[in-house]
Amino acid sequence: MVIKEIIRHLEDFAPLQYQESYDNSGLLVGCGETTVSAVLVSLDVTEDVIQEAIKYGCNLIVAHHPLIFKPLKKITGDNLVERCIMLAIKNEIAIYASHTNMDAAKGGVNYKLAEKIGLFNLSVLSETNSTLNKLVCYVPVNYAEKVRMAMFEGGAGFIGNYDCCSFNTNGNGTYRAGEGSNPFIGEIGVPHTEPEIKVETVVPDHLLKKVVQAMIKAHPYEEVAYDVFPMKNKDTSVGIGVVGNLPHAIPFDGFIMQLKKLFDCKTIKTSVPIKTTVHRVALCGGSGANLIPNAIASGADVYITGEIGYHQYFNADNKIALIELGHYETEQLTKEIFYDLILKINPKFAVRFSEINTNPIKTY
Image 1 (cartoon, rainbow, N blue to C red):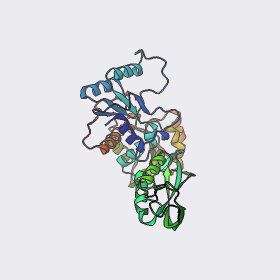
Image 2: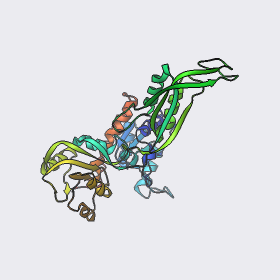
Image 3: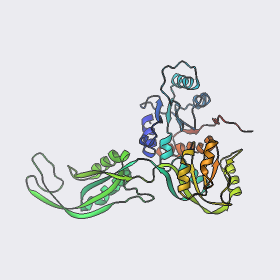
Image 4: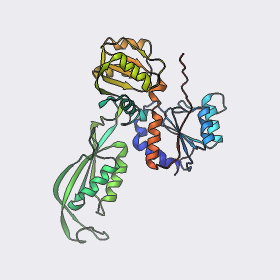
């Protein structure tokens, strides 16, 4: 398996189109055509992480935080980023990052946090501008199910927590096969009417090409009639942060102790609790203080994130309790996401969790 095949599977889950404008996700070091020996998954890329990859024979590192954020004018080893790049290239190790696109993806960082805490009935705090398309095709009646399923398997038909969504209308298609054609049904030069089903479904923009190819491959006709309509509807499952409910309300102090245990936090910062119990929880891994207004609007009792500045605590405005777990603590679960995604490609593939704690912040 080559690097670009692994990247394709990762980006089917968390497309680069989801990343924020300031971000730099993607293949940062290395060649996509290189055969992968083994993969090391990590939150960050440091010299210690690269040395770990060398030790275990991993020639691809998949990390959450991009090693390269700003443009480089030189690579001389004067700082951490330059030294890491030089060390990786010297040892033929590729580096791939999936950052804010993994934050925004359904099932990504924030969904994983919510799963760990035990939240249900999840919705997105801040939707991205992920666009949807309506894909319409016309299929002979006996082949409609086959074509529908090919489209669904390609990624079409997802609406919220529902999949395999489509609308189907019976009708009659007409055509006349010309010279040089090879009609599946009908004769060359003779007008033909065929009972068909009009299949309509929704497709995210980043999966449109893949779904159309799957539809054409499954369709029996030599020339497939289909339409693509850009929609103004947003994909409500894609965005930064989530909000959901606990199975039952628990005391605020008990909830804090639960978080300390779940995320191995030595200390947790909070604002003044607004309620004595917690039932509705909003969260955003990493630096999510900018979503405090969204968390308040969601009706959450508490908002959990990785980093909150001193003055940002005042934005709670006695309307919500803020909980600051730490950037590393809220994003360490990305390693599990990468690990599971890569093993889905091949359960026997060599994938390792990095054993390096890259958290630069220490507490005493």
